[in-house]
Image 1 (cartoon, rainbow, N blue to C red):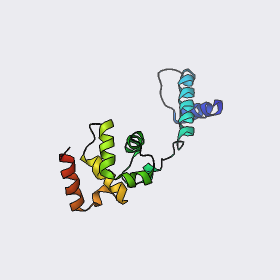
Image 2: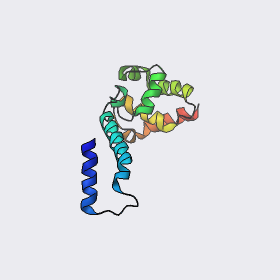
Image 3: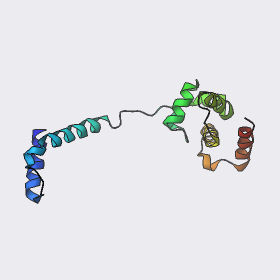
Image 4: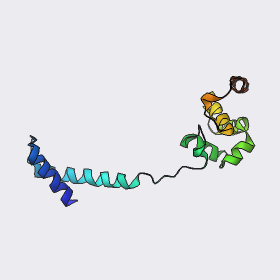
Length: 131
């Protein structure tokens, strides 16, 4: 830490930045910034993706909703089906929308929701409107 701060001070003197106070006065701020950077750098990559998040269209929010609904593996999602999974999610989160339903169907079929056939989208839309 001391070495990094001294490097910053040398850099400051080299490029001759004009500051209001002597550079030594900024030592505490520099030190805190470097410590925060080091803490955050060590945290990157710690969170592993769940099995559900590896499916297309399933992010961390959808994965957490599915887990809360009792669907914690891709196999359970496929067995449950997109409509039943959506109904369970809708009980937890009433604001779940048609895009969530499309995403679940895409995850079950293993393809991005934008590549779902139009017939599937129309069927899902009629199901969604019937709720």
